[in-house]
Image 1 (cartoon, helix red, strand yellow):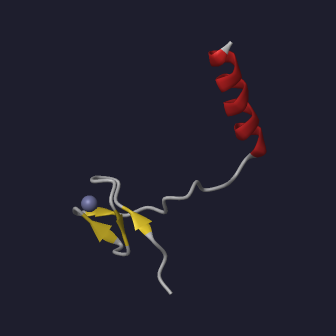
Image 2 (image 1 turned 90 degrees about the vertical axis):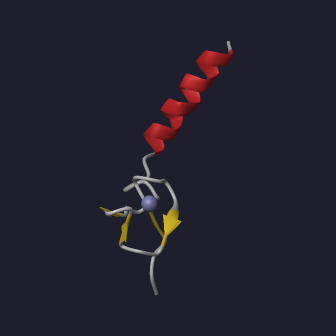
Amino acid sequence: MKHIMRCIKCSQYTMQEVHCGEKTVNPKPPKYSPEDKYGEYRRKAKGIS
Ligand SMILES: [Zn+2]
């Protein structure tokens, strides 16, 4: 089973390992960090107020 990949050049999702002459990347973030989520929430809250 192949993973869905993303082209860094045209931003299209593809199952190819190479697209537009560039190696595609995994569209998901390398790792999930709860701290980042809270940081984003804090930034948003700050922006609203
Ligand atoms: Zn492409």
